Length: 124
Image (cartoon, rainbow, N blue to C red; front, side, top):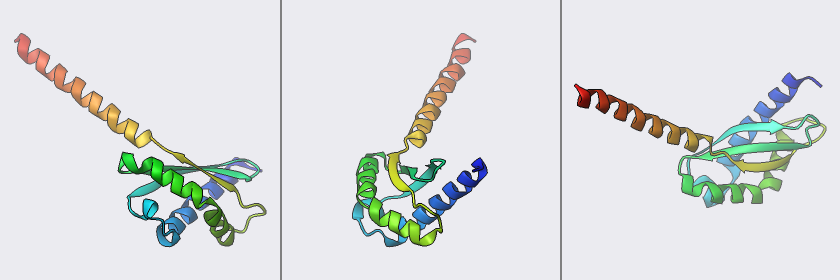
């Protein structure tokens, strides 16, 4: 099986899950916040798929992942209805903290740039 097929299926899983979560999941922990599915990694045999989820409010991330894990059976069934695959992958939801880490790095770089901007002014 070619890798590009797995990538296409992963993108399709991401698209379908995003739609189903936004439209059909009624859990307030999920529908209450702004979230995004950053990526989906399906295994080569399509038995499992890791779904990386990010939330704008970092304090709600753990609650959302717990809610999605609880709704995994419902989401898997909806995914199976939407996609025609031999096996519907078992969904594993993972908190993606890359956006939070990127914001932290950006803040650190701004602080460094501000300090470098102050030092030449002090010396002259």
